[in-house]
Amino acid sequence: MTEAEQIVKLQMQELGLQARAASRVMAAAETKIKNAALLAAMDVIDSTRADLAAANARDLKAGEEKGLEPAMLDRLELTDARIEAMIEGLRQVASLSDPIGEITDMRYMPSGIQVGRMRVPLGVIGIIYESRPNVTVEAASLCLKSGNATILRGGSEAFHSNQAIAECIRQGLETAGLPATAVQVVGTTDRTAVGELITMPEYVDVIVPRGGKGLIERISKDAKVAVIKHLDGICHVYIDDGADMTKAVNIALNSKTNRYGVCNAMETLLVAESMAESVLPQLAELYSEYNVELRGCERTCKILPNAVIASEDDWYAEYLGPVLSIRVVQDIDAAIEHINKYGSQHTDTIVTEDYSRGRRFLREVDSSSVLINASTRFADGFEFGLGAEIGISTDKIHARGPVGLEGLTSQKYIVLGDGQLRN
Image 1 (tube, rainbow, N blue to C red):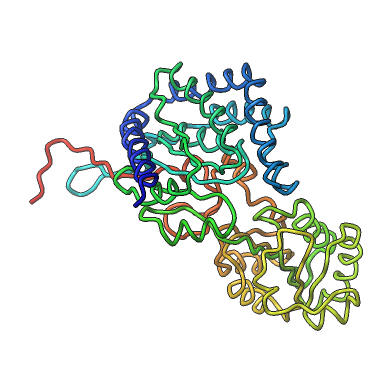
Image 2 (cartoon, rainbow, N blue to C red; image 1 turned 45 degrees about the horizontal axis):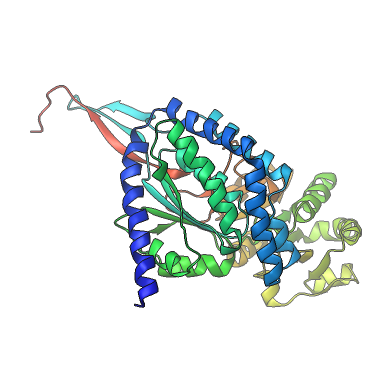
């Protein structure tokens, strides 16, 4: 290990030590105190807009000099509207119900004891993300409200923006009488810091990576603590036999074209063969208005002359752009088989008027969000009523689907007795 790497290691251990101590205070903090910290941070952000803009301007200038793509610079920019959204986000999180301390499933046992479960924080959450500095507020606010401490490692391109936002949150915590070290942003752009953060189980309980597939694969491979993540968003819409035509067209259009570069956008459209001749030409005409490239199976290409033959790789593709693969399938059996083979267990929708088939789709499609007669774009923490989300999880243990406040907690068993002894 080089001297520079040793310095980073010591820095990360210090962050971890402080976060662990802060997590114990946060776990005991009352809801009104946590809300006070969120609202105080909101006020600081509101009153220091010029400082945030100046810090962001430094990052934008450095990004332009490095030749960052326009799309990356757009994600990096803190516009007035985005600062306003950060302020509103803090207000919304403060208004959410606090899950910590909630007791459920209390029941008497034959011995006379009462057994139940209490919701508790996870402890210390490490969050690794890229580009968008407003993620700093989203992540910090959710961790704070759920009684956790957090260590944030944003992208190097947003270093000054993230530090400025973190200072606002620190001031909010101190105003409410909570430890400023409950939210810490890694103070170096050295990539060694990421390797240290994900291999400190003595200090960090959970890692949440938010970024590209390469980042998430690396974190998942090297982490020595639990990871909440999803790799791909290969989402499907299946138009079933006898589906309502208007619903089918609108859902298939919205799922693809509402936004392209998001994980809950449809990437593959499956159509029952009885519907293909009627629905595909209508959709193709609409997709052409959005310049969506269509790649289809042989049957699709016969119906749509402008479509190109899809390769096997297309069925596994997350395009994140104006490209769509289409397959005509025999029935719901073939649709479910396709989804469970090629999908990423993220989000899948059936358009159907048949109640039994809809229920079967819910049971047999093995994804974190499964919908009937609704756009895949609804797979989102805000749309699901969580208020906000820290990411999407396609894991099957602990959190699955959009991860909000409850997903940043765990449960422990509690027992209420009155002197009972086990025989």
